[in-house]
Amino acid sequence: MVYLIIAIALAIAGFLAFSKKLNSSSAWRATLTPLASIMGSGFLVCAPLIGGIAGPASLFFMIGLLVVAYCVGEAIRYNIQYFEPV
Image (cartoon, rainbow, N blue to C red):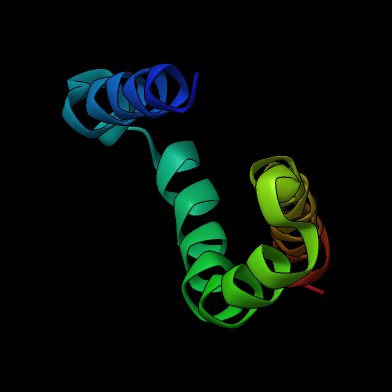
């Protein structure tokens, strides 16, 4: 089961990494930058902690953490779009 999840994740990541239409999209770059920053710093600390606490269910906790990170990025993008010019 774990190998299937990893294979699906790699297939999706490969599609996203090599999609010309997606790479040229400014909305994709605006989404990816805050999300990558949050993931890069936050996951380096959170992944070992969640792995130690949740054990086998840590995959689902990491997915939840990714959703939270995306929501934070969405709030940042919204604020930049509507309140930065002010």
